[in-house]
Image 1 (tube, rainbow, N blue to C red):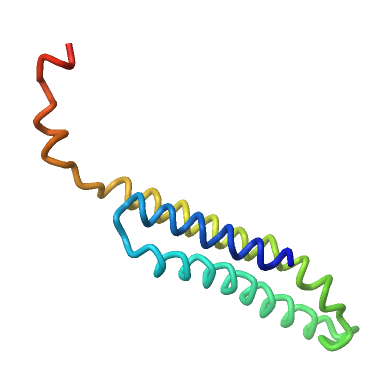
Image 2 (cartoon, rainbow, N blue to C red):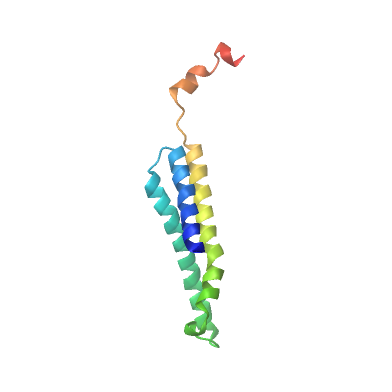
Length: 110
C-alpha cells in the first residue's frame, strides 16, 4: 500500500511540473515513476554484487523486505534528482510570452 501511495505522489509531482511547463503531462508522470524504479533497480544490482563478492552469504539468504526498504531511499533519491534537474532546465529555457514583454516599461508598473 505504501508503494502505491509513493508511485501516486511521484506521478502527481511530475504531472504538475509538466503541466506548469506545457510539456506532455502523462509522459513525464510515467517517466518519474520509471526513474524511481530505475534507482531502486540500480541499487539492487549494486547490493547483489556486493553481497555476492562478500562470499559469506548468498543473495537468496537476504531478507527481501529489508532489501526493499533499504532500496527505497535510492529510488526516491533518483526521482528527486531527476525532478530538480528537469525543473532547473525548464526554468532556464522558459519562453517569455509577448504579453510579459509588452508590460515592461508600461506606466502601470510605476
